[in-house]
Length: 204
Image (cartoon, rainbow, N blue to C red; front, top):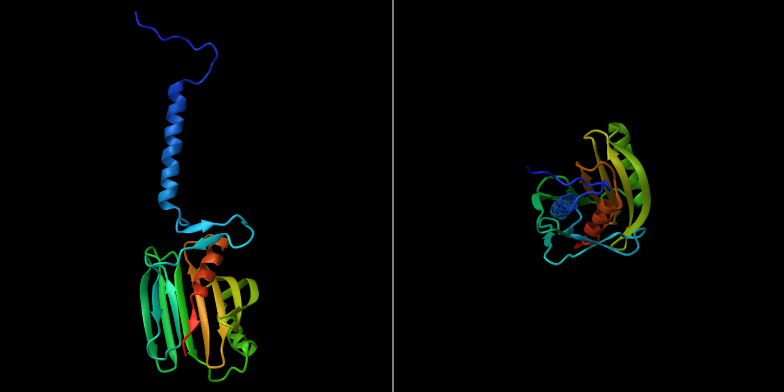
């Protein structure tokens, strides 16, 4: 008659440990495959810039009609739109899932004497449409030009966004990283926005 030896110590069997280990290995492998941060490297100081990007191989785009600016973006992103008209240029690129969307809109500065006057119009438009709820704001400098950066929520379309508004005496720029799939604006997204922003240069 066959029988199974009773485990009097109520200790888990070796087979159970092996099974749990295999499950943990599978979960870890899936995380590495689908981790959205896999192209970024964490630095030691998590309170500063948490992610460092390798820009080698990124695509370079330069506006054609007005010669306003150039910018780099990851080579696995899709260029959704790039076009220019007299006094205006628009560029858009996105991840394949459209979970992150980069938008850059530049136009000739015909009436703004300074950054404050440019922001007055931005604020007026946002107030009229109730389109952008500001969560954080900071003053920065981009390519030697004064700028305002905002983290916010697009109430019309229902997603978070990081926006930087850049003033130049010849042109003004609205630079957006829209995050339709994000549940919040984490340091990962802010660092990504600023990494993209660091590749931006005026060319006029």
